[in-house]
Amino acid sequence: MAKVAIVSDSTGCIPAETVKALDIYVNYISVVFGTESYREFIDMSPEEFLERSANYNGLPTTSQPSPGQTIALYESLFEQGYEDIIHINISSQLSGSHQTALTCAEMVNPEHIHVFDSRTVTYTQGMFAVYAAMKAKEGASAQEILEYLEMIRENNQFYAAINDLTNLRKGGRLSNVEAALGSLLQIKPICQIQPDGTFQAVEKIRTFKKALKRLIEISKEAQLTEDYQLVVMHIGNEEAAKTVQTELQEIYPNHEINIYSISLVVAVHGGPGAVAVGWVKHK
Image (cartoon, rainbow, N blue to C red; front, side):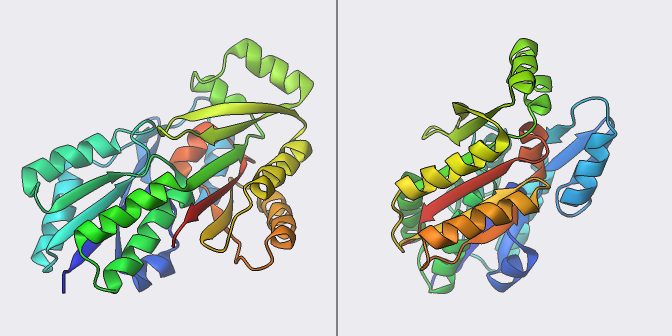
């Protein structure tokens, strides 16, 4: 039976108990405040991130895993007896993590390290790793898991309602004028991960309450079968996330719909209060 290690970038936001239960390995990306760097979920919690951000004049930045960190992870997995490694990255359009992983794989063992661009973010990305790890536990080969991941990548979506435009403006993804008008008119964009992995505003909604309603409508319009897992995600806005979860549960009574914190790396750009929905086809 093939022994395949599943690695996920920390942006996948996979709960610690799931990581442990499925033997998933995590490569940590960091958020940076000035000269201080913090690995997301290890050195800094979502709550600490929001508190620090509120008292920080600039915009935090992000730092992808160093080549040394990634190489050490790969080498340790081979030392543990794994025959193949599948490393699932945050969208290559949003981080340099994918390119670093490709470079490190080439240096360590290019034939047996498979770097996979999820082309998505946060727990939508995390679900790729969770289902891949389940396949690995069942004894699937690396090639079988990669084919399965291709299917997931063709059948997933991520939409986010942005509550605070400040970070999008600071990060250069929104002009000062657009941000000022958006704040004045209470415009709340709906952003979507595109098939190529880019993050783009696709709708502009008046008020955040209406934006949340639109997220629910989009999810309903998708007419998801039980072959899909549907999740709700948020940045320090559990109350709104629960509202969305409750309404989605009425639409999809046979789905288990859980709530997850959004990656701190993504929160740097999405800003506080954002709520997202995501789904993947897993069978």
